[in-house]
Image (cartoon, rainbow, N blue to C red; front, side, top):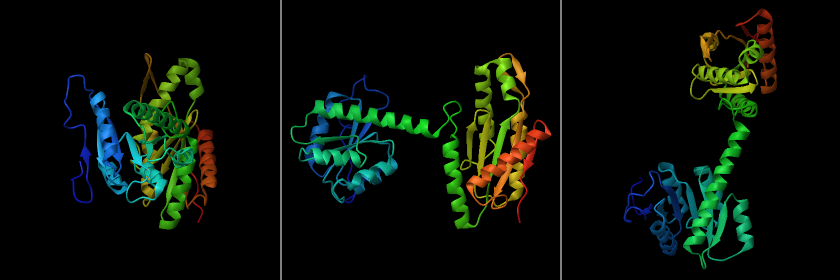
Length: 323
């Protein structure tokens, strides 16, 4: 936990509360951002009524940002007039600092306009302090956390493949655009590999869709083991994966990754009571060598993949580098 100082004061209201054997293993972490001690007293009642909550208190948004860098926060309750921010402008700051935290805005006045503005700024709920009680506060926290969980699920559905857990084509293409823009600024290179599982439909017909899904999950895991943590592996088609290699300074490394992909994919793969011998065609294209844009790079890699499939199973084709 950050050390208390004159510029950062943290009050953990749950630490001194009586403990009992029914306390859950992991409490819901709630951070109060308010220079008004009344907010702390209101939430203090919340701890007494339900040990599932762990309450922390800071006096300013700056302190909150520092706190959130070092500790997990599930819910942020921020006063509209919290010190060192301008009105509701703190909401986006807090959300960027901890995107998975639910955010509730507190205000000294009950205003529909302020409440609407709070939601537009990214808050999950808005509460007026006047007449606020523990029941209302608990309900707001419950609803806000559930809304945040739903947002997390929707974000994951939008950006990740539900079967393999890898990023999907949409996210892969967006990362490719950003990587090329970064490569242009830094005068570096990048490359993509399109990996298509050979005869995947035959596997589905022979062993069933469940077995075919298991094959895709395993291949996704094997491909992820071929690259660095900041490279990207995606499932971009039913039977096709994409690999994005960033900051490529050694062309020999590109050949090495292609070789490892071939070796890992072709390793024996148990499915049901059988051991499958799976292979994949690989098409490789690089920036700025093979293409000058993300769209062209995807197209050139796809053409290389098509040539690999035409040559037979388990083939790798690297697109010609344009001088």
